[in-house]
Image (cartoon, rainbow, N blue to C red; front, side, top):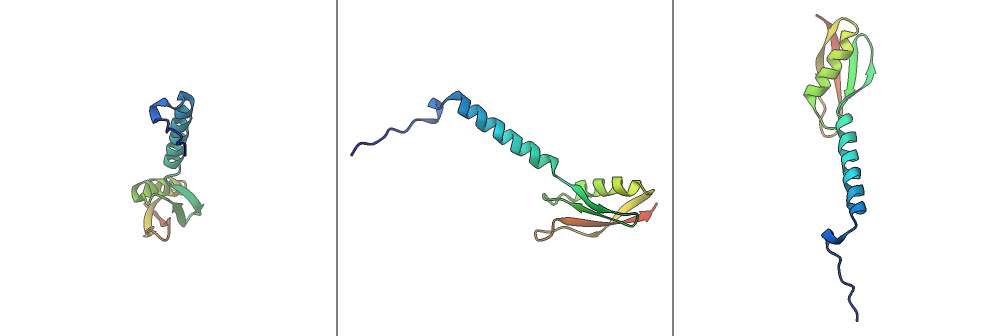
Length: 93
């Protein structure tokens, strides 16, 4: 039985390592971009989705959306592991 020698990581072609680094960087950038975004909005409420359950970022996004109607956002429903949406009510300042 002949064993095939394992090629150590350092002997792998540089191109493969560069491709892996670029792929990993792309995944990290895309994940960071999708922190929180508006799912639906109207003058009375805003629904913000946050896969990372980042309440501060969701609040910023909701405040910006409610500001279009000269209002501020108050949280009504917090996201949890089962539900990634935050629901905000737009109230007068």
